[in-house]
Image (cartoon, rainbow, N blue to C red):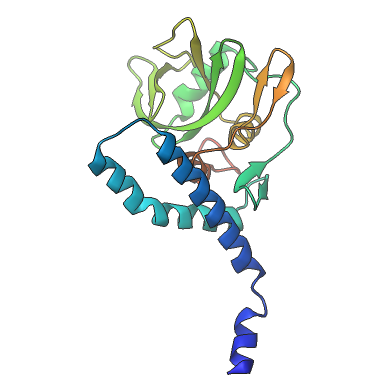
Length: 210
């Protein structure tokens, strides 16, 4: 029995890392659920019921990922070099229009830049509808955008821009990078949903599904 136990725990580093990732994801997601607005009890039950499954998938992916980024095991977060300035407006409207017209596909992970009174933050989202006749794309969370990257529901306080998928934009979104008028801001922790979306990125070819 002693020999069997020694064999089981001899190479447990990966299992310890997996447990760390799961713990960090549970803490973050349960905190987010506790602070979210009051919601339908049945919806809350469904989210809690699927939490274990999604967290295990996210932890497994982070542990075995092939993305060009590092993983912080303690915080279950992506780590990468942050640009000194906001990456918004790196591409022209024409380039964005041409890119999405040619390569947009259902389920494609994309980065959205949210400009809230001069504070730029990036979020991961995904395409769930493509309307080529109107040259626009619908994102699962952030709604309709033109192929040029302009959100159809802009207001004076919050402006959203759809960024062309690239190593720069998707890496920054995965790492939760943000900027203000002074430069970099502390990285934002991604939601479980965003972590799972990051597992769908084809880092070898952003134009094709993984």
